[in-house]
Length: 432
Image 1 (cartoon, helix red, strand yellow):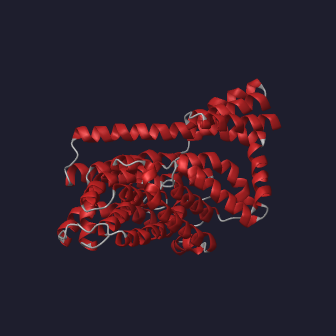
Image 2: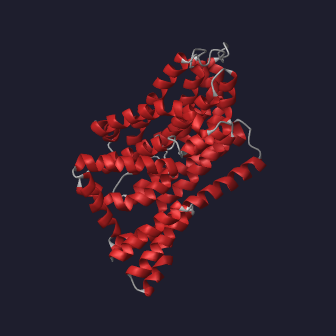
Image 3: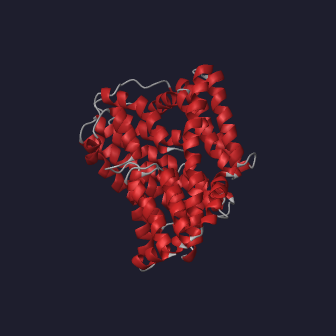
């Protein structure tokens, strides 16, 4: 069994290091472990576990929320939200940077994906910020950091998956628990952004005109109502999380085609195709992760690895700190969905052993992954915004470090004060 466990984890790590797709690495590691640790007949479980990996009703919410986010993005919601937030913030030093942060957070409440949020906002904001005197590297850093809150602010695709991987966790409780830490992370990004803008005299040439408030509110209203519709429907019990995803997708289609009229049927078709491709990639990873999870559990690899982590951490605090460091590094390389799929079979025994609240722990995981998404040298959100800004990734380091420190402070606050995450679910009457 020891050889099988080493092979299972070794093949996975080796293939990942060689740049193989994560789905291939997961499946190959699982199959290698099965071949060595079990008999050849156990290979018959590969097909079953692949199917079982995605044969879960709550997973339907993922492609539906991806479709909703795509429709909102292509409807021009981001541009209208920017005008509305500008009407509130007004022309001031650092004002456009703060507008970008607020829009990222609102868009995160529609897409549930950091990279998608970063792409939608950066495409509109970076040219505007450049004309106002902001360096491209600074703009890319701020938007990458702010868009990482999408993994916390509901509806988060990663938190949907976490609720499926951890037995007994209420997705509504996770959504509620992510809201306050998500806002706290947004504030953590805004403070150094405002200070840096003033210190380095950025945004001095911002347009002195302020968009009319009521006209911009009317234009942005449908976009602003989307998070209210999703969360309000969940709170009132009008629909389940999966049904909320369907409602969000239909709502995005209605406002894009009927209200804004920015989506023709060709654009709608392209949005469906792109969403299907993105969803297929995620579902393929989830399906093949089922092989890896079954093999690791059957062979005892995850329990053995969990004991090693606990031994290295020595006590509860040390173990938690070690886990946070590992998740931070993983967040630099992988997306949130992949990280949850890889690490949860390993971390679940540790969470149970220390009696950590699963909702609180899920939020901590999301916050670490969020920080990793804009931390060089490899950062999925930052890669998107830097490419749109046309700047090298290394040019962002001087700005990103300030934002990493600030969001890490928000993470530490949630670690020491779990009520920041658990207060809202308790008030709303959701269980863990």
